[in-house]
Length: 190
Image 1: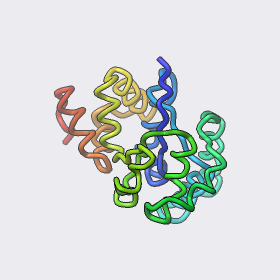
Image 2: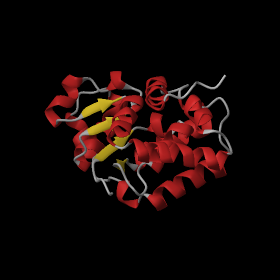
Image 3: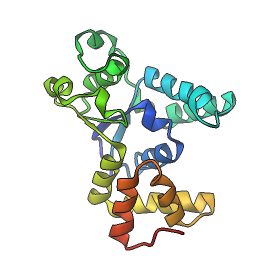
């Protein structure tokens, strides 16, 4: 399977390491969607990694993360969106995100900052802003085996049970974690 449904991933989502890990794995074969971002979005991620996390990343790790993302997803970078920002009405600090979506012809922006993307500002462009837990619930409902296999893959690499990985994801995306726990009839780890 190779889905080419374009989805802009906002910096606030990419900067959440566990969530980002799962989302990017779901964009690898068998790809469930095509992630989209700009250099400006990736610059914001780096800024968060270096300055805004409770445990900031070392500079070399942030640089390595970005290099790997650009290497593995070269088709995800969008350029030339800057002139579009002038006509947008969503929150000024996130106009570059909406402009990226418009330029890429993406119909979804995955973000924690839904308030910065009011429906009225998105409607002319036929774009929706979606919380990451809701987007992951959609992906899971479309392809539960793929989503579960990626969670299991992460668990194996971290030498943890999949339930532990899902519970950890539940700290930032509880509705998704609850949805999968219920669907699989798993018990929350104690």
